[in-house]
Image 1 (cartoon, rainbow, N blue to C red):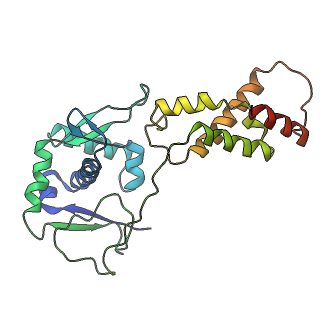
Image 2 (image 1 turned 60 degrees about the horizontal axis):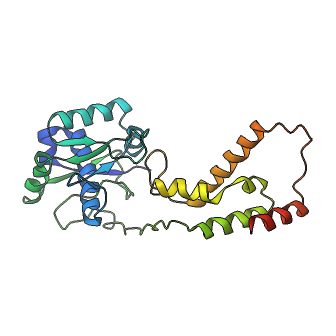
Image 3 (image 1 turned 120 degrees about the vertical axis):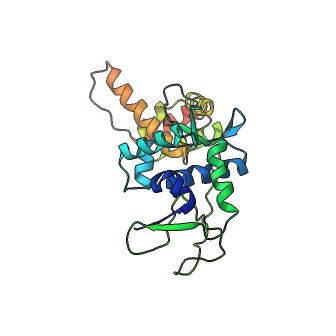
Length: 248
């Protein structure tokens, strides 16, 4: 689906269209995080994203395009980068606006008629683009105005009891791999990472993480097993046995 990308023309004149689009994205998320009082480090509010994620949002950019744009903005003093990932091996970069970068928006917002829409195709359609409509005028587009904001479901970390009950449900349904899951290990691992995945993204579904975890533990056990007996079907009797053991 085509999407309309918003940027501020006065900023584009100074830094270029691609850089103006990237700045609008970073400005939007930094301001959103500031309003929600999240991702605050060293007295500044930050946003983070991977190069691949940017190319997914903006398919007219290549990976090299994204790297070049970010390099230009950082070298020009409009943004600065950091690394505040909870996992040491996670190299996802974080970005925030410098005083110079923020001043571009402050100056633009005091003037009128300062936003231009760049259509990816000739058809302008509503989309859920991460870049907000930055036009300071009260006019809306010609297809019925602003699309309603969809409220995101807030993630709620599970308790150990939630995890245990979900595992029992899976065991009852015949999912043998779940009997290898240690509730404490799973819970402690993700609690330590503040319920973030290894790439730094916030977890949306802990149950989906548990599916992957159970599968990995099951495969690990199969690999290291020295038992050469033939596979035993996971019968209703075995399910009842494991449920009784797991409930202790």
